[in-house]
Length: 293
Image 1 (cartoon, helix red, strand yellow):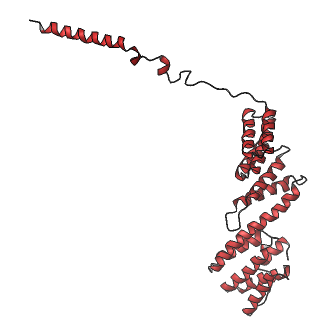
Image 2: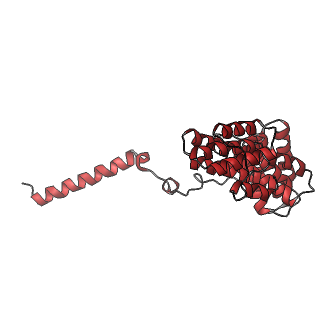
Image 3: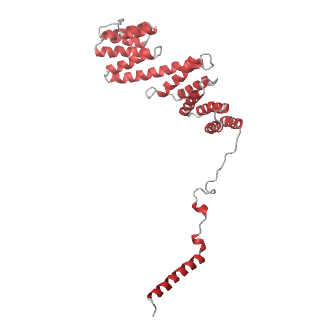
């Protein structure tokens, strides 16, 4: 009779031998190398170095892409130039061309952003007048109609005004002057449009505030005539006759042949009134201040 302890020993030996046989018969099943377990193994994280390209080659390749009208690729080329050669003259030139390429690509916001970066980094460079002008052109090129937000028009005006104020002898100043007038007309038209909106809804105080802004901020724009006629209309509706008479009188003094003056005159006549300037009116004081009366 076998002893229970001896039986257990024989069983244990059989299990061990069977396991050894399995390991010998299938060695590939559980075979790992150190690289298989190492997450930083060389074969998994092989470093690749970009080939060194000279700065002038990067710049000239960007110019070639512009010639081929591939403006998006040109932007990337000039951005790569700045990345590979930071703090160099090539980086400065590349940033100018990035502004220009974005402008040609009609990526107007990107052009403005790149221009702001250039102005911040190189405020005293020879190209800063050009960059301001180009940024103005970018915002001007995306000018919305008067019913929409005028943020880009405001930015364009800022860039153009910088050219006129700081670089009056630059070759960009004359066109910047012209664009300033157009931007101011646009902003005055926006205020006038909102004023008309309030006027139609009998919100006379809000309407007057908008017409006031046209007179106070955007003198010498074509919207001034209508703004004064609308003031006549709004003040008459509120029963403030002195301001209505003054608005019409100042309008007639400056634009006697205007259709808007004829309309204002008829409005007053229909109420038994006539144009008359009251010198204590804010309208009279505003126009004396800017020299239009």
